[in-house]
Length: 345
Image 1 (cartoon, rainbow, N blue to C red):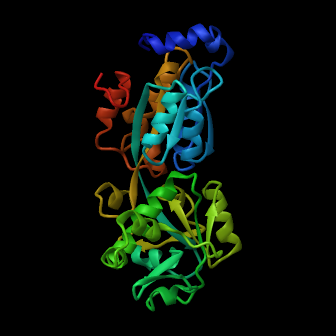
Image 2: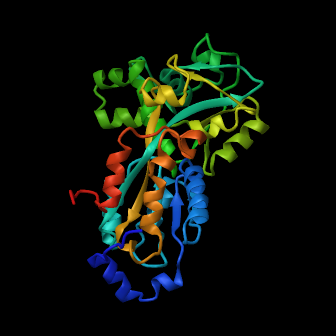
Image 3: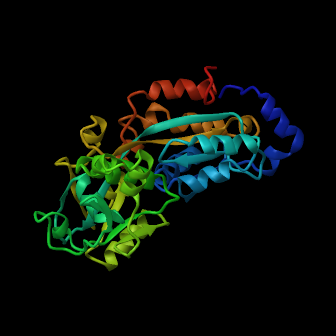
């Protein structure tokens, strides 16, 4: 392994907590439930193949993980935040206020968001417009917003099955929720002409977007704050339920779930890698650069995670369902050089 030069920030941590490495010798990670299984696979392999302890990986959601990441620097804060969305400007600002000024963004690959239901139930062929009509708190009808009263999928579209609407969607602390709202619900609002109708009636663009993405609260859309196993359990107890999952989780539970098409496309690693499947997103983790050289094995773990053998198309993460990033080599160089966000190092 190459020696890692301590940065000024690293030295600052060492000065505050000279025994940081001795007090905590394992990498600590928290965040996205979508990234969780990938990070767990890598952590276990890292512990088996390197002379460092196995990293501790926790879930909690992208927003919760990034909040913990931005609490500060030092041994009592996590080293890596997993995220199923890019870090937001407000989160970068919160990090900076707490002294986390050098952040390394690592894109590990891509995943699709899929809509799955009980394997023995009805099959669905969805469009984003279907989900907008089913999930929106209000619909824009005859020039005004009215409460959404649709309660059956065949009321959304007669071509859909006669089945009560019961959706289990990611809670607001999950990065998947943001993608669901923007790439499915908002896209469906635009696809159906409802967004433009609001603009034409004098509604400003920000308000129109908010109205498009406002989710009903009458019990037909249920926020899931836990991970995908909770969503699966809800479907197991309510066979009418349709859940929002990451592709990898679905592919590892095909004995229990069937997946819907979206806009006529079946979600697969191939349809996601080509961009044909419309609901996909990049997955990330974020490294606190100030902890490199202080927390043993941190950089080594990051480099191992995105190595060709692990994150490449023939690696174990692809076998689990991750769509390999065609620009993985660029990410490897960025981590090797410890490039931080907003800088060309």
